Length: 275
Image (cartoon, rainbow, N blue to C red; front, side):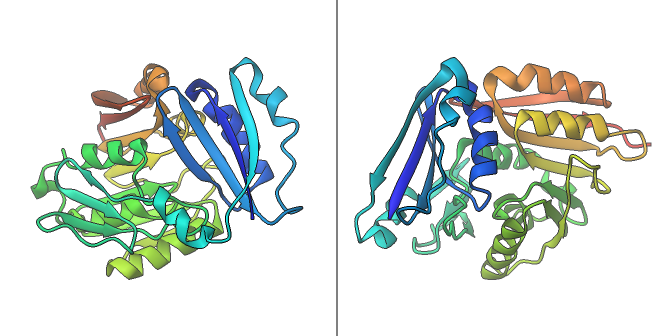
């Protein structure tokens, strides 16, 4: 088994991610640290895609592309990269082989080979902002998760008390993973396929979106008076991109009410008025 890793500055993460999505549509591992983001692809020798052109695409911010042979016990050792995390002292995000935490709301996510367990800062930012919604506004309410991935935000929303949760994604593998994780957590979410570049689905009173900044700007451009949420929580963007994303949503009638930053990543809580 070969592990091919691409490490770059956070400012170049979107460019690298866009190139890798084309080369490896089945998904990849993401890790980050102080001043760097790394994406890794796993595959048998000869099956790993050629990323020789990625260095030029990434420009001056490129750090390294490296490959290494993974030990035969990789199937067990890869679990070391997926650890549980406690969000805001309330929500316990964990892979299924870890134990629940007493007194915390439990969300178990199987990372598979292409998805994380929700420990990334952008996921944590979204959940922390969701926790700011008063509990009395959750029961009977509806939430939409745009770009659900493994379903962690949608599942957390059901655990936090939203009665109806819809979730959509353009990737069939993501929808399959989200369905399996929802069933494993004993919750129901309405899943559908959507291409946000082609148009928005009907929005819920609260929308959460853990997407890249370019996609968030596309979403903002598609919001109008007839399809505008009362609140919008978004992340997936670098802290340096937050201002321009906030401006894009302000043009759509959603104004920034709160901002949360964890490391290099940021999330926004936006408010708007429905007609």
